[in-house]
Image (tube, rainbow, N blue to C red; front, side, top):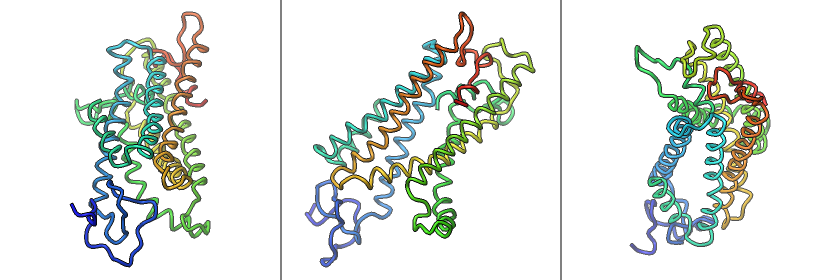
Length: 314
């Protein structure tokens, strides 16, 4: 390959065009706006994102079911373990970013990370297992499949935000981007609070339905309440992610020097990882405090005897 050729680029380089600052191809050569990007690059990014999302969310969605099923762990222990796993997975990009920025480079690091992915929302999932998940006739929706509503909401809301909300917000706030990055993060946090409130109300209704039908002491019983009740909490958390997570990514990326931007994105994941560790610790502490004598805690193995609604309100 000639030195003037670069991957994912089409056409010839304009001799009078300056290269993009802080950007290079996988061989360290300069990149020009007129011949860079486009759908060839976009397809590469989309493929990586889809593969990594399937691997991460597929694992996290099914891990708690595996821990409480074949491994026989309690709900609280399994939820804490899943949070620890998510926390460790979210902090690992810090190591990857260090390696990418100072040793291997971003392209080779991405390829190696994707290869390792191939080789190698938790309590909401437990809620879904107790509900009536029938779609048509005897066809049932797997509990982990309920989590698809979160990513699907993100996929649909991102273009809606860019095409519909940003022009309105730009006119109202006088900001070219509609909302500042910190305003987007704050909006996402408020939507996350709305998600917890919605989930708590749904769980309170589920517990009442179980009591009304005499199912409190029947572990594993299907509560006569449709899985559709869980959809709003997945939708609101998806919308909140568009505001908070995208805002944090942009904030960390733009505040870092060009040569350390991989580390900036890794710090974004690190924040979520620390949050997962805090959540896991909180679950363990609440489980210990609310377990009186031989009674059940808020995270009782039989969810009909627990109080996830109290935890979600915290």
